[in-house]
Image (cartoon, rainbow over all chains, first blue to last red; front, side, top):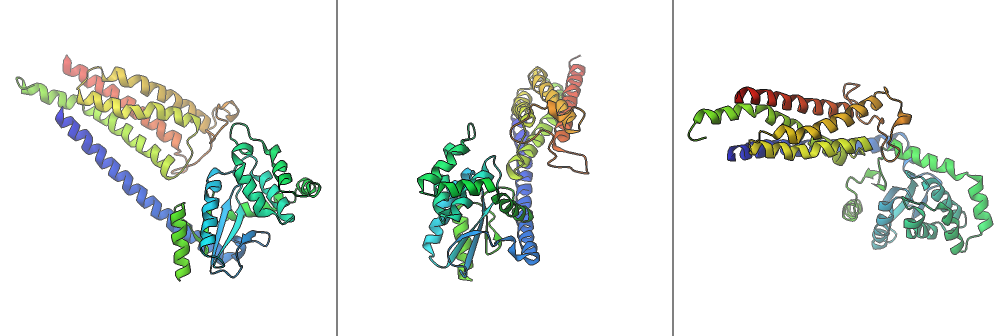
Length: 219
Length: 151
């Protein structure tokens, strides 16, 4: 009986170690591929990270550019957003944030459209804050209420006629599609996905993003 | 066991196939965790039901082996057969024998979405099916050797 326990434990330990080795091999391989993919894409087409339509915070000649592929309906993007802004606040004028859309949920595209509509009236970032603030309501998984989104725009004091006209025209769809295609070309699997000076952030989180920014600033 | 050293050796050999079943279940579990947690492939509904059947096997079989429980098969078989049932259904969906429209999986990942294709045709559902079949085969061999030992 004791022998069995040792034997079972031994086999299990060997298999778990094999798993850990497989995980670290897979992770390093993925990291290598992600860096390579970003490099190749950047070499082929430098605008894959930033398009003329992209919204950004911070000076264009900032030493460090953070490109974030995000989805207004994604919970992790909502959580990450204030942390990214905190980094921007820590390095005023030295770090720039560029936002790109990666719509992965049901109403992401519509929400992106509302952002663009607000952007037309120079209220992009306020609208983004409003969308993230109310995301648990309009972006609820059980009963999403995208119909509430124009209400948030109204609260910001936007010209609702212009807002509605912009949404009806639907021109934002092609713009979102371009972002999405760029994201796919960069091999993005989830949101938010960050690139710091065109290098992919491998582990999502404030600390790793901050240390990558620090690294680039120190170059 | 002390009184009859032969009996110890016998029970040693009769549990070889139980060990095999346990090792297969454990490998299958670790692989499914690798696919889900490391490669971040979302498990579909049918995958979840198969996981529900597979994961407890690693504990049930281990306890049965340690206790040299003759009724090991009775505890393990319901899980194996249920898992095998889900797995067969899943493979029929996956390889298009049953049309996708009948699939109960509308949320999350599609049950017929191809996420991994080793050698061009070995997807995750086929690996699961092979695992359940191998576990079932090992347990049947276990029963056979046990019967022979006791007769």
